[in-house]
Amino acid sequence: MKIVVIGGTGLIGSKLVTKLREHGHEAVAASPNTGVNTLTGEGLAEVLAGAQVVVDVSNSPSFERAAVLKFFETSTGNLLAAEAAAGVGHHVALSIVGTERLPENGYFAAKIAQEQLIEKSGIPFSLVHATQFFEFTRGIADDATVDGRVHMAPVLFQPIAGDDVAQAVGRAAVGAPLNGRIEIAGPEQYRMDEFFRQALAAWGDPREVVTDPHARYFGSELSERSLVPGDGATLGKIRYQDWPGREATGK
Image (cartoon, rainbow, N blue to C red; front, side, top):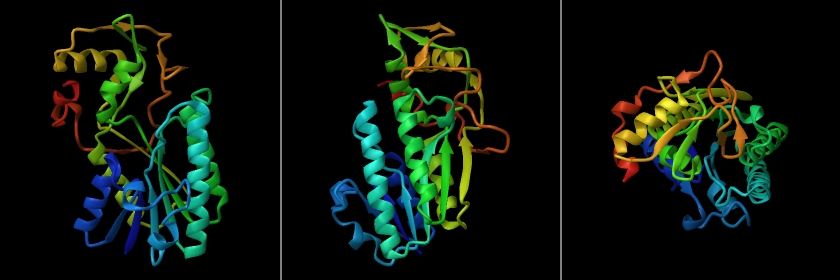
C-alpha cells in the first residue's frame, strides 16, 4: 500500500515512515525538504499519484494564533484538494486530546479548523487525538516558567511516547477509515504538577515547580480533565520512567 506521510521527516513522521516500511508498505516521506510543500501545492500531485492513504502529521512553524490558523487552513485545504484529484481513499490526521475544551488556545482552535475541513471534504478519514508527547516535556516546562519557577496546575496529565503515537497512527493508516476519531494516551495518569516535579528532578534542573490551580497551559487555564482522554482511549505501552529520553530531555 502506498502511504504518503505529510510531515514525514519530523518527530512523529520519521518514526511512522520507518514503522510502515517495516510492515512492507510503500511509505513516502513528504515535506518541504523532500520537494513537497502543502502551503504552495508544490509537488503534491506528483507525490500523491497512486497513493491509497495520506497521513498528515505536519506542524506549523509558528504557534502565533493567526499564523497557525492560516497554516492549517491553507495546508489542509491544498492537501485535501490534491487528494480528491488523485483519488486518495483515506485521510488520517494527528490532532490533540481536548482541542474542543480549550477554544481560547490559538493552536487548539487551529486544529479544530483543520478537523472541520477534513470532516467536510467527502474523503473518508480518521482523526487520531493524542495527549502531550514525552518529547515536549521540556518545552511545556519552559513555557510555564515565571521568574525562574515552573507553575503547574494540579490537574490530570497523561503524556505519551512519540513511538507509541507513531504506532497508533500507523494502525489507523492501514485500517479502514473511521470517519470519526480515536483518542490515544500514555499508560499512566499523573497530577501535572507532580509529574513535572519528578521530571525536573530527573534532569537535575534546579527550578522549583509551584502548584498553581490558575497556572496557564500555553495561555489556557485548565480544568481537571482538560488534557486527558475519555473512556475507551487506546493506551501506549511505554511508561515515562522507562522512556530512554527521560533524562536526556533536560540536557
